[in-house]
Image (cartoon, rainbow, N blue to C red):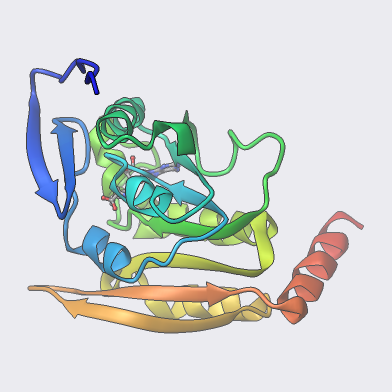
Length: 225
Ligand SMILES: C[S@@+](CC[C@H](N)C(=O)[O-])C[C@H]1O[C@@H](n2cnc3c(N)ncnc32)[C@H](O)[C@@H]1O
């Protein structure tokens, strides 16, 4: 088979993850322990949303098993980098990459079997990061602006029987995430964790059953009544 030549950005680093080859350009988050915590627990199927795709690593892994993947990132350099990596790893027919803020680019409101998010969480003075790479860690004021916005919006994009996998740090109030999803009737549990030098990162699994569907529909009705 003849291989297409890809335009590799000059300022990029090449890394290997299992069988994958990934190019990480200098405005894009390089996969780290938090990425690997999701990767190691990922059993993707159906339609998957990879929120904050970065270099696209989780989309590529998900695409090996799932029917289709939609990847979103607010950082246009990340979207470009993910597109290149998806092509190099030969899964571009199964992955759509979109630039945008959380769920806003998903106009037709697709309903997912699985939503992945390795969320940014460091507290910053301003809500708006000063450079594209800062989106990778900047959680806004208090470190929870992005996570809280994700928690408010994600439920209506998830199928009954579907799962959210979100990685978060002990620095950004894991209990609040668990509480907020539980309030909406979801079954929430920590399925993996890793202690790092000054924080613990946890992988939270959020499961939607019929009860959570009823609660989130009635919450939405109350809100718009
Ligand atoms: C910690 S990095 C994770 C990247 C990749 N998923 C991984 O695990 O290696 C977080 C990613 O979320 C993106 N991001 C941050 N805020 C976002 C938002 N509001 N909407 C979409 N993507 C966002 C960042 O640009 C960054 O690529």
